[in-house]
Every structure is written in C-alpha cells, then in structure tokens.
Length: 211
Ligand code: DX5
Ligand code: ZN
Image 1 (cartoon, rainbow, N blue to C red):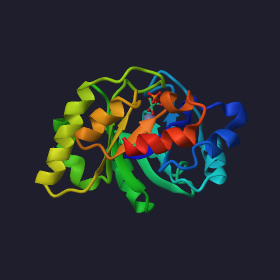
Image 2: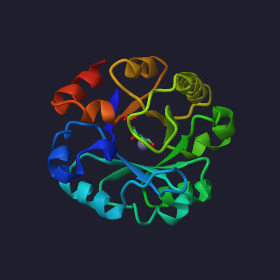
Image 3: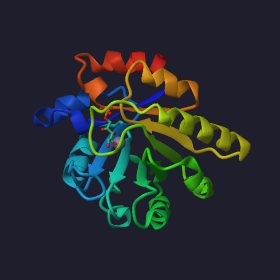
Image 4: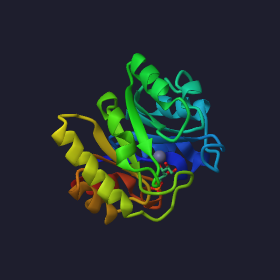
C-alpha cells in the first residue's frame, strides 16, 4: 500500500520537523480548503511551496475548493505528482484538462454522497480516483464503511474497461481500516490524524505499508 500522510493535522509551529518526520512516505497529501466548498479553511500556495522546498517526497494536492479551475496554476508547484479536484465542484472537467496540460497527473474525487456511477464516463481521462471515506473538511473523523463498496466497484471497472487509474482513499484511515480498503483494491491511503498522533511516524509508515 502506498502511504500519503495528510499534513492538515501536523503541528505547523514546527513544520520543517513535521515534514522530516514523514520523509519515507510515498506522497505528501496537501488538503487545500477554501471555506466555501467545505466549511473549513486550511492553507494556501505559500505553505504548499514551503513544504515542497523541504522535501523530495512528491506532492498529492487535494483541492476542496468551489472552482478548482481558478487554482490549478497556483498549485502547479515543483514536485507535484497529483492534483485532485472534486466531481461536485465547478468546472472540474476543464480543471482536469488543465492539470494534464501542465504535465501533472489528474485526480477526480467523490464525496461520500456521490455514487461511482456518476463518474464512470470520466474515468478514462483521470490518473487517480480519490474516494472520500469522510465528509471532506476536517481531519480526525471516523471512517465511513460505505467507501469500501465504491473502492471495490472502481477496482472492478478498471479491470473490465482496461483502465489504469490509481485508487486512493481519504479519511479515517488507521491500521484497521487500511486493511479493509487494501483488500478491495485501494492503491494509496491518505493518513492524517492516526499518523500525526504517533511519536515515531517513520516506523508507523513502514508498518502501514506492509499491512
Ligand atoms: C478531509 C481531508 C483528509 C483528512 C484526512 O477533508 O481531505 O485528507 O485530512 O485526515 P484523517 O486521516 O485524520 O481522517
Ligand atoms: Zn484529503
């Protein structure tokens, strides 16, 4: 399993050390929230660039914003591997097009209330599908088991249609739920509060990878 720690719950008073503490992760997950698409504000391009300058680990940027098309240029930052936009946001398809024009892998995310059927037609155009297993907006929430069926469906569809998007799951992931989502085909797990509540994060990341 690939691990993408979400820095949303990191201690921003010592961001450099926090980023160093997860430097064996596969990606660093940046949760960008605009206070409109979700009822929370997180951080912007200055912090994202600061993180990018502190690490070699590729960035996995999750845009939870009303109109992601407005933000693609801003978040086209060195070291960015994925930029993911929400199906439920405005201009998501144009945003995906622009992300790919920039040579960055494009992700499409669905909230818990959105069914896989609603995004099937877009799957050939994306490199990653991000299944939310919590209502987006905050870290530290409980895993929603409905996500398991969606991951399983997405895994089946990519085999049936010969597609090669990665499946990422985001929200409430810990040492138990990670095994449930891996069993049905998830490739990348976003881990926020579970990881940042641990002392030895490198050791925890290593263990989570092997579960
Ligand atoms: C929620 C974010 C998630 C969250 C994960 O809107 O997209 O990435 O930070 O945090 P945990 O792992 O604590 O649920
Ligand atoms: Zn996220």
